[in-house]
Length: 154
Image (cartoon, rainbow, N blue to C red; front, side):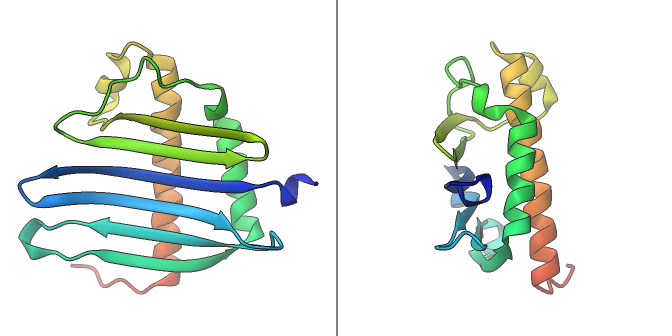
């Protein structure tokens, strides 16, 4: 099996339950059958000021998936371990799950408010890898949504 056809899946979740109910941001990428395309799904639920659930789904090419794989490999997240990362708390949690070829990781940690939360953690190097990878993935997802859907600015 070539690298282009290796199994791939990515899911990110960040959320909490609070005054406005279950608020979260979640996205995932799933490669379809022949590996030439994939679906990207995005959900954002903010009940603040009666906002409603936003769901978007789009098809993306294998080139987009190749770029996501490159970002993941360059980050070296697959070498990390979340054992010493802050655990979920009243402010919520983040989850990151990646299947890349035969490798599979699943991380859970508290929400990270700022880089200071990373620096002050028991595993600043590992958590820094997670923090910046999530920033890169979110930027990519928001760019894809802006390209695929006309979202009117507020």
